[in-house]
Length: 628
Image 1: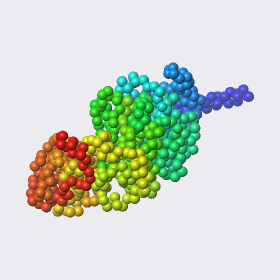
Image 2: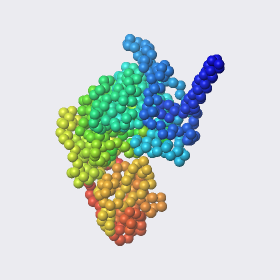
Image 3: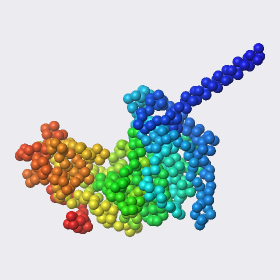
Image 4: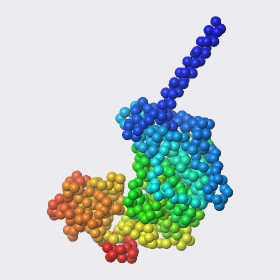
């Protein structure tokens, strides 16, 4: 009898173990949290079945699972993260020990998002719980956190570099500190940023990664993050007790960093193979050069990496009088691996030597939250003895958000940015600030309190910086100057005097957008128009052009050589299309604007300021006009 009971006992234990094992295998078919990838082979063109998607998994559980996996012995043995194997340097001039690259686990290249592929999900097929998670991720981040959380935090990416970039040998490079500011960032994007830096940076060059928390309120960015980064010798977290904004978080990180070069990197990026060495080499050769990489796009919807096609042109920073950063494409140089001068810096990636950054006064600590700091650094670099360059051999992916999903310390986003930009204009733009004021509007400028910036004016004087006209001539000689034009301001209809011609020129969907009517003064910058000597009507880089059917007016990138971009503002106050030979007419709904046969009706009459607007036209620009 005792033997029978013993037999039954061991049988039950065996059944329990087998059952548990099969349940474990079932659960292992998918791992939904950050850094845990599907074991099923999924191709980027296939939609992922709903059965494979997570339902309502609390974020805290995901964080704990990630932490548990990272702490496991198997993980450390396979990844060799804590103790990089030491090898002798190939440089015979030094006996210093160098560190080898970490050995990553072999990846399933068909897992979600691997090799930079898209994760395709049909939202309509999600369950109710999954749709709630889907929407919450978008609301919190302005990107698809649901998809991001399905992708490994160590996902593989292609090597996007040109072949000749891979053959360059770099010697005696300085070390770098990577400063990553964040506020309420999702777990998966933040850790994917960190791991991409750890995994794709030569360890002997990467001195540290400093995470700078701008007083985040999300639970996973507190103790769970501290516990996680404690596993990595080179990663630390520094925290602002109260919300200080991106700029002050970066200053905090800089003050806690120690390497001779510092790279400021956004918290939703992925660096790629070979990203670091060409940047450090450029700063080593000229430590007054501020560098940025080719910023590839990580799609906010499906997280596929869309690399810039830089075979013919390369993206560099442009300048517009709204004082917002814009890209423009310039021809690739010869040799094409050569760094390219850039008028301005994008804010998500900035590389600078510690010495030069301190010399030019770092970021302006008087800036609030976000906005303008990248332009201020650009102007200072050029005007105070250095320059800005894009390095073609360095590729970094960045999630571009459609909005900024952050708190603004009880202030309106627009007012914070306007304050920073007014401060920027007052210190660095000289008389050219008039063009910025025309966009903002004189009344609004008088309402903005930019704070005390006398210390920044003194900094510029003490450094003996060049004037802004010199900057434009050196960095961006083809810049559009409103002073080159002979008509400017809002365009008001005489039949409906409270209605102005309006257009929100979002360049992401600019082509084919239609000029419309709107209440005057509603959005000043959308109603500021310039009539220029080449007969274009424009704002920034975009101009009026008749639609394909020649009945309405579209907004498109300017082409001054084409007749369909030419308009006349006649003495009878009509606006006439040279190409279509029709006049601009406001319709009775006070929103629709048409091109119609010219008549003497009041709805075809427009009030517009004649003559050049306030602001300088430098001699070098006049000579440029004459030469053309």
